[in-house]
View 1: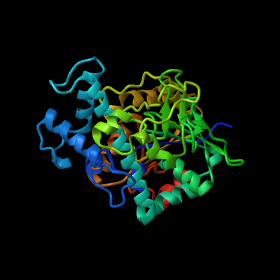
View 2: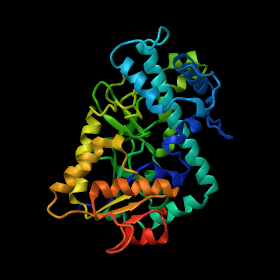
View 3: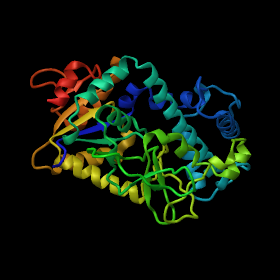
View 4: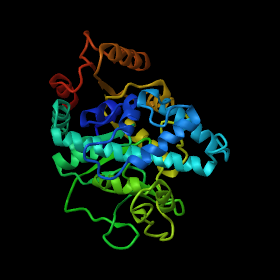
Length: 376
């Protein structure tokens, strides 16, 4: 049975689990957590050197002085992807390393933030739990614009869901105690499978550049995946220890090929021309075509996501019967007003925050009223 409720979630959804909004990513990257699972100082030091060289800021500059991450990634991508230097000291190979260091630090930061929020369980965490507790997993699917694993972690904790269909032919895998090749990870008993389409990739994915097989790992293996992005030679150069923990894992078929990752970063040149993204986008289209409700949570429908917005509009207009819309957002009134204008301008009069007709736009987050509308 096709899911009737498709949840399209953005950074505002993951904010409930302690993760930063995009505007706060740089600050989160540079902060040192009280209980770091591993030494992040070499990564932040290296990134500080890069920003000093390329953007002329102090090596120890605070996040407020950094350029936008879109500018960092786009400048790296435009040079590295075409085989050019970015200044005399940053050759294409160095730029690719910088991109991977930045991604590795992002992955570990997201894990740190989630773990910290899980320990404190603040008010936003409580609202997130109420949302998931009321969820009917048998008729629900997710389309996530995020890389994080908040969906997977909360479904596992509250509904014992350990099987996720990423709709891109990813295989469930694990890291064995011995050897260097990943292995198939059997499911622990009978568990429902929930579709979770990640439009820009996920922090629990690793990819084989040789056979093009994609693997997904339990969300609790986030730090192991993050370390896979940095080669052992680079770990020595950066001062990360032990180097043997980095780029350790190999494809189970191509045992000489280290696994890596494919993430569509904040770059204005999102790299979506890989097999897993092509399949993910086609799967998202199918879910949207068949669902009764499109429920947007914590996603502002930004202009930068023009490819995804075109997908939404194309599917909306091609359906025999239009979907029911629900939009849940939060924050300051100036921001929620802007989000309302985005949705109302794009989807039309079905986006309502006042009468006549049932309310479909909720500006105060996952309130009891919003949850009632979502789960009816």
